[in-house]
Image (cartoon, rainbow, N blue to C red; front, side):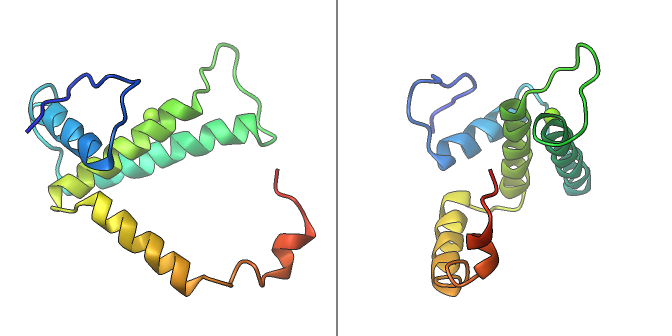
Length: 124
Ligand SMILES: [Mg+2]
């Protein structure tokens, strides 16, 4: 197994690589996994941080002087804790994502195309 604590940011990174990197980091630098309940709280916290940035960059909220608004970093935090939760539950996110995409592609094959509200306005 490759240890990827500091992956080359220019090299392709698979979901499995990222899950392994999160696992290696947690087991070494992070000492151990937080409990599933703590990770659930962290997931909600990071979701709120994403919302905070978008409320200020896309919404009507204003940033405080000097406030750092880094959506990419907050989304990476969200991805990180998602992978930590998947790891501690033995979930292979590559497989789960593929199954989820297949489900969305069959179940929702025409749902959005047939939604007149989606063709009425442009979101961004
Ligand atoms: Mg964050």
